[in-house]
Image (tube, rainbow, N blue to C red; front, side, top):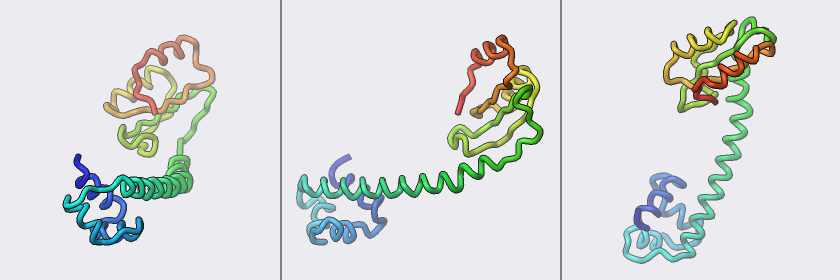
Length: 155
């Protein structure tokens, strides 16, 4: 990617379609200079790259802050509110199937099961998914060992 493409793509990511005037105002350069850099007429000075980087970093921190706020308020609460049904952590296995690209926020199915064989059957019915499995407290050492050998895409 050359400098012109990089400046254009970063500018559009930060400010949208009319990025040149907004970016030039934010880094205190003239619109005319920004247009010359964007057209490739003049070379982009190092100090401009530094200012653009600082704007990008500030935006990333702001977006990350809001992303975390939404994660706590929306995503976690939504996942926690899914009904599990009758689940006894002493004797029951709990398995959740999730979309691979969306991780733990995309629960497609879940089941409360009694055995490791049931876990395998559930997984076969959901190919390509990733799983979260809660093992019962009373799981035998053999079940724990067999479960450890299973090639599960885990969250």
